Length: 89
Image (cartoon, rainbow, N blue to C red; front, side, top):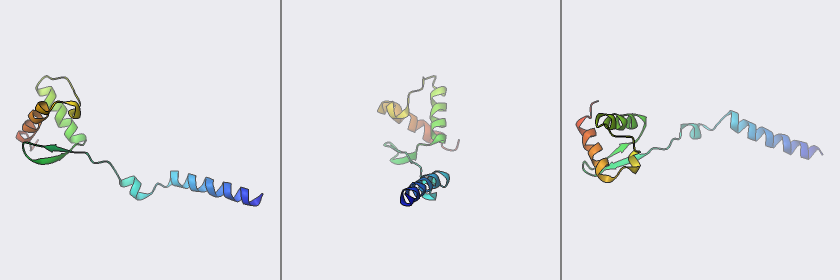
């Protein structure tokens, strides 16, 4: 009976501890999405800032939002061309 109680408490502590104190490596890890620009032969990180710029590009051109990954290659190339022209913004 004591071993069952000990096992149950150990399991509860392990589960509870992992929820309360996540591993630093897991807390820091994040998925990094990189998108390749064929015309300029470089990569861009697709993060919140890039998404904001993409939405500004669409608004400037009066286009409805379509996820960048779903846009056809011509539209993606147009965006990268615009993006390189507005690099400092």
